[in-house]
Each structure stands twice: as C-alpha cells, then as structure tokens.
Amino acid sequence: DDALRLGLRLIPYAAGQRLLVARDMSKLMQLEQVRRDFVANVSHELRTPLTVVHGYLDLIEPEQLPELEPILHELRTQSRRMTQIVEDLLTLSRLEAQDSLPEERVAMAAMLRTLKREADALSQGRHAIVVEAADEADLLGSTKELHSAFSNLVINAVRYTPNGGTIRIRWAPRDGGRVFSVVDTGQGIAPSHLPRITERFYRVSTSRSRETGGTGLGLSIVKHVLQLHQAHLTIDSEVGVGSTFSCVFGPERILQPAPVGEEA
Ligand code: ADP
Image 1 (cartoon, helix red, strand yellow):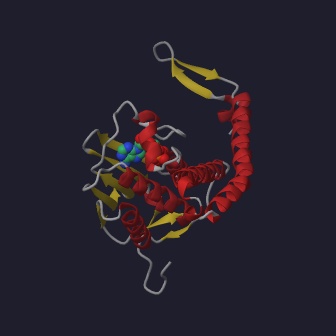
Image 2 (cartoon, helix red, strand yellow; image 1 turned 30 degrees about the horizontal axis):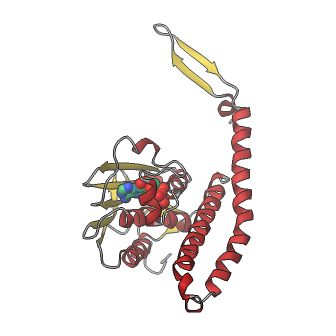
Image 3 (cartoon, helix red, strand yellow; image 1 turned 135 degrees about the vertical axis):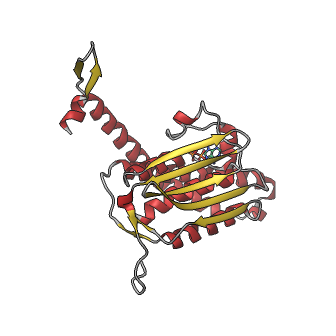
C-alpha cells in the first residue's frame, strides 16, 4: 500500500542499470477519493426526486391528455433513463468502495438459464440465443454482482446485434481456469475504440447508444466486478462481423459440481 501511494517504478536506465523513480501519489489518491464521494453523494441525492417524478408520471393516464401523449411518452423514457444512470452510478460507487466481496458458490447452470431468459425477453425472437456450457463447474464469488456483470454483456450483445443475428453465451474451461463469454454477430467495435471502451460513459456512437437505452456505464461495472474476483475482461471484435466479450477466471475461482443434496 505504501509503495502504491509513493508510485514506485523501476525503469531501465543505462546498460545493466535500473532507475528507481518515486512519485508522491497521495494528493492524486485524495482527489480520486473526493471524486468518488462526490459522485456517490450526487447520485444518492438525485434518487428521491427522480422516484417522485417517475411516480407522478406513472399516475397520468395518456387518455386524459391525448394531445400530450408523445410528450408524456418522452418524459417517461427520459426519467427512466435518468433513474438507470443514477442506479448504475450508485452501483459503480459501491463497487469502487469495496476491496472484496462476500463469496459463495455461484450456481452457473442457474445463472446461464437466467441470462438466456433475460436475453430472450429483450430480443423478443429477433435473435437466436444459444447457451453452450462445457460442464457443471461453478464459480466462487458473488452471485449478485456476477449476474449484473454477465447480464450487462448479454444485454449489450442483444442491443448491438442486428435482427436475425446469433448470440452465444458460453461457459468453458481455459488454461486450468474458466471463461464466461458472450459471442455476438453484431456491429463490432473498431480497434481504435477498444482501449477506452470500459471507461465510464465512453460510447462508440453516442446517438445510437442513446437509442438503445444504455447508460454508457455497463462495461465499467463489468470491469469492476471482475477486478473484485481477480478476473479480467478481454474483447475480440471485428467491425461488421461481431464481438466476443470474455470474462477470464483463474483456477482458484472454480468449484467442481456440488455433491447431490448440496444444491446451492
Ligand atoms: P452502453 O450503455 O452504451 O451500452 P457500455 O459501457 O455497456 O454502455 O458499452 C459501451 C459502448 O461499447 C457501447 O455504447 C457500444 O458502443 C459498445 N459496445 C458494447 N458492447 C458491444 C457489442 N456487443 N457490440 C458492439 N458494440 C458494443
């Protein structure tokens, strides 16, 4: 921790020599903490007024004001969007404030079924949704947070894949660990966007993403959840062909099937 605060770095200098560079990071870390607290506080304060606005909008029957129907529709859409942004910001703040998560057996068979159901509901038959699980292995981690991460990837795949496309939800072994991946035949992401894609609010096409109802925070949430599981995200994508988002877990996170009668 002290090394981190000091920002110690060893860099090559002359032949056979290294230079140890120490930089005082405490000011930066304090600023980062102020930013986090600020975002968390603002989000929290916005929650109540938004609930009220949302609640009152729901009380208005469009038939009472037929000429205002389109406006009412737009107000509802935007207030729902704002609520989603606030909820996602609060989720991010909560994840950032944690060093670890409570761990349990994450029943992957049930998880994959839930994700398929969610994808089917969103796609409404416009895509083929396929689940491919190599075996019955489970994960050690937080079911709630992992579901939110995996679900973000599945929702994105549906959103950014044209009708008639295929979305595969995979759970497979790799290098002694496991990979959860979502493979789509969607619009793909140009290589120039990839390095920044998991940043908050970063989007390839702002207008298109707004239409799809995203907040631009989904992949940041995925990244944070994975970090808390010592896992990482890899993205392979080709414009016009599709994308593969993979969550890579180490062997220490893998649990073999629970003995019969010990269903999680
Ligand atoms: P959003 O709420 O906008 O989807 P995300 O953080 O989940 O925010 O994703 C950031 C951006 O990455 C999206 O706006 C989109 O441009 C791009 N993206 C994410 N998933 C995919 C995908 N499966 N195919 C193509 N582009 C994607």
